[in-house]
Every structure is written in structure tokens, then in C-alpha cells.
Image 1 (cartoon, helix red, strand yellow):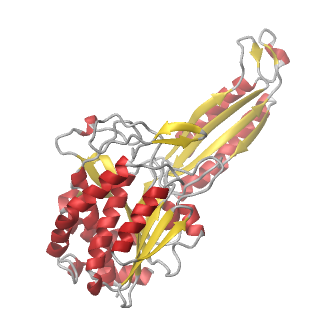
Image 2 (tube, helix red, strand yellow; image 1 turned 90 degrees about the vertical axis):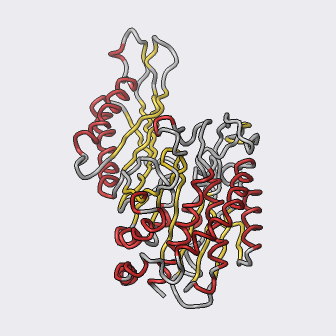
Image 3 (cartoon, one colour; image 1 turned 180 degrees about the horizontal axis):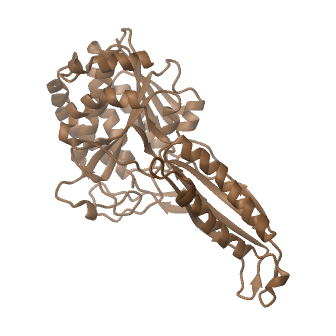
Length: 433
């Protein structure tokens, strides 16, 4: 793979002019299919489905792919869809990925394609909304699939289109997402050489693409601490082993890992306690307290440090207070760092700049949010990008956040995503045929 990436870097002057397919050809094709891409996005947005429940979504995706004459596999990692475009000529296998699931959020914007869907989450009825833009991801990838299929005679190798369920996390008691797709062999048969993915951003201008080499998004490691002490009357605290004060010391001590042990000029980390449960009366010191939190890191060194330091802090505080502590790390799910291969990123920057315009291809700061695209990147070199979806007449401070009821991205942002997925595939293939 390093030889392939080196070859690509040497061919950048040629690729900057579009390789074997003129940039104007891709631009024209993207213009022509934009109405269809928008219609697909509106359909997916109006009829969203939760993680591991993307049954109708998967049917529509598979239907669209079969219209293109592609070989389609369904039921991958429960509801995932995979299609292969074979040029019939030797060359690399390029994978392109989009996620499919929505969130238990009630949409408040009065859009013509507003979601009124109600689903079930943890046994309760909930409103369902594409509040993170996965509807646009599917539409953009289907648009790229259409263009690449029409350009089949000019491809070298194969394209694997991956539509992934459960990026937002599988329901309680289930598994899902990219990790399961990898376990089921989605990167094999044929073996993938490189993978590209993108995410729409409600806070970045339409027409821009943001990227960075190395850690793009954080590893996420939820954890739980169960502290067991000795119950006593609140008036006689000396008769207790107080899990409340023990938990308070743990919360503060965990913050010192970031402020005093992480090398902040090189690394970054976050420790957040999001839940504390214990006790039921003002005059009773309880026997148990439970803390639940999350760790976010942007490289392996910081992540390894957190895995060593958190148990050390928890055990040390518990011992000093005479309490018992049980740490579960990770708690239920765990995502690695979304790590953009530096060589691949450097080699593809000319493609990003040519497609979006040099001033619109922006090196981004890392984000402490997480993405399970990272499981693909653990196996093959990958490049993950943010594509702008914020209207130009809306200030960033006024743009809605992801995972909120007012989340909004403009349809016009998808055209760049379609062109990026297409051009990245074409340029990589041209360099490695």
C-alpha cells in the first residue's frame, strides 16, 4: 500500500488536471443528476429509521443500486447494503461509505419533507429524524454511484459502495455498525485498498470541504464506576464509608489526568462524567454510588494513557477512602480514532482542491465527536472529510447543531459531496491502474 500511495503522490501533477476523465465531465454529470440526488435525500429524510431498523431505507438503497445494474448484497450487519462496480480492468478496489440511520429526535422545522415518523427506542415510542445528515450521505453516495457507473469504461479496478447501518450506535442488547460490517468481511472479497467517506456539516459553508491528516475525530470510550461503601445515618458520618465524598474526589481526580498528565501541546483528551446516581434521602449516607462518563482522545498515545490513568485514579481514591470501586472501561461500545492516513491525505489534497477550489479545501481542527468510520480505517488507509451544508447567508453562530430538533442542511451542499466521492475514486484509480 505504501508503494501505491507513493505512486499517487508522484502523479499528482497529472491528476490535478483530472486524470483520464475531464473535471468538466464530472461537473456536468453532477449538475444533471442533482435533482435526483435531492429527491432521494428528501425521501430518506421524510421516512427515517433508527439504528439496526433501516429496513425500508435499505430496500430503497438496494433498488437504486440495482437500477444501475450493480451487483448488490443486502442484510450485511443486519440492514447494510453493499454493491460492487467492476470495470473489468485491473486496478485497485476503492470503497465509498455512507451511513443510513436516524436519531430519536423530533423535527421542529416545517420542511416540505419533514419527518412525522414515530419509532421505538429502548422500548418507548419516540419521534425519529435525520438530525445528523445521514439522509444526505446516502443521497450523495447514490449520486456518485450513478456517475461512476456511467463512466465504467474509463475506470480501472472496482468500486465498493458501502451503505452502513447503526453508525449512531446499536440499540441496547444489540451490536451493529461499521465494526460488525468489518467482522463480516465487508472489506474483503474483493479486498479493499482504500476507503473514502464524508459527513455533511450544518456549521460549515456550502461549497467547502474540511479535512486533516491524522486524528480527524476522537476515539470514544464510555465507562462506568460503581463505588461501594458503608451506609450510615447522615448525622453520624464517622460510622460510614461514604461513597458520595469518594465519588466527588474521583470526579475531580479524573480531570487532573487531562490537566496534569496529558501532554497538551501534542495530544488532546476529554473526560466527562455525565451521570451520577446514589442515595435517596438527605439524612442517609448511601451504600452505593454509580458514575457514568466518556473519554475522548485524538491519538493512540493519549488513549493508552487514559486507559492506564483512569483505573489508577479510581483505585487510588477508593483505597484512600476505604471504599470498593469497580471500573468498567469501555462500558458498552468503543470507537477508535477516526484517523486519516497521512500519506493518502497528502496525495488526495490536489483532488480536494481541484474539486472544491483551493480556497474551499480547508484544513480542519480535530473534533472530539466520534465516528465509527474509524473501524474501516483500522484495516485500510482511509480519508474522512466534512462537507459544508450551511447556507452562505446564515452565520455560523446561528447555524443549528447536529443531533438537535432544528438541525438543517441545505440541499445545495450535496453536489460537492457527489463530485468529491467521484473524483477521489477516479484519481486514485488513475494513479494505481
